[in-house]
Amino acid sequence: MKIGFLTDVDGYRAPIHPESIEKYSFDVHLEKNIFDYLNYADSSLDNVKTISNLSDLDIVACVENIQDKTIKELKEGAVLIGIFDFDKIEEIKSLRPDLKVLSFFKLPRISRAQNLDALSSQANLLGYASVLRAAKETSDVVPMMTTAAGNIQPSKVLILGVGVAGLQAIATAKRLGARVWAFDIRKEAKDQVESLGAKFVEASTQAQDSVYAQEVSEEENQKIQEALKKQVIDSDIVLTFAQIPGKKAPVLIEKSTVENMKENSVIIDLAAGTGGNCEGTEVDKVVEINGVKIVGETDILNTVKHAATKLYSENVRNLIELYIENSDDEIFVEMSS
Image (cartoon, rainbow, N blue to C red; front, side, top):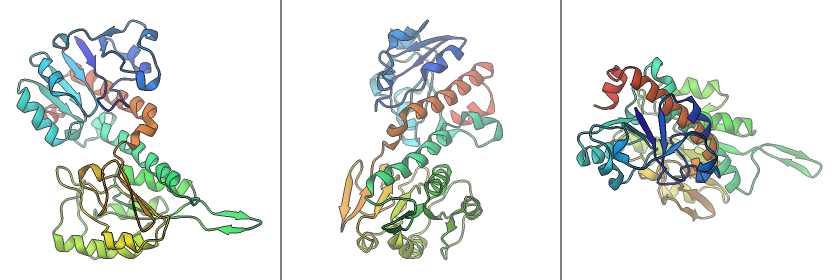
């Protein structure tokens, strides 16, 4: 059994970490320079082979992006592992219908699959890193400061979308000393928000009894925008994580709301890659409107790349071990369907 690990096209994460290599009982083959981003030379790794021919590999793991040229060179019937969204899965299957594509996007939400959950491990880090990114972008401080010259009040932080990333953002902002509010359309979110010491923002819409947020009508979305407007304007930092699987991200903050925010406020739009939760967001750019910064970066995980690789590497290793043990497991049936 030959297993290959490919360099991430974006260059800041890998599907394997140097510390994980010795845990594999099978031949591990690495793409050349896979650890350059960690300043870890391939030559310093013992008993590791470099990929010479992709068509020799039975299992291939990558992160999110894989080039068409690489897909075409894979062995017939090979297993391809990665964090592929639904569009990417279709693209891969159209190029190579014979491949067995195991995407973490389609991992079933069952208890015995928890140690395979790459989306959650990466989302946790994203929530943490996004708060630090906001703290870096603002020229104010996050916690209360008491000095001989006077007091500085703690920042007001609003978090929209409280899945794994949003909940970690709440916890991180609270640890930094911020006053935190949060909103999510899902019914279970209120208790989760309040359990972390944040205040839940109410909206006059029907709460959804679902694991993932679902698309709402235009009328319902306008109600949400109106309910959030006052809190957004009053906030120093707004972090948005609202996503709908396979759909364009909902717009929760209108441009007119941004124009009424306090100067030096910061919006970190983590949904920028799927359209953005804020009007005016531009992908991988920092836009300024009336002194309010809107950050549309899609590579915030780059700031915690070592930890991101370490966690993702373990998710991949757990998946590969389970697959080798029983490739007919219902987990893989669902992931490859």
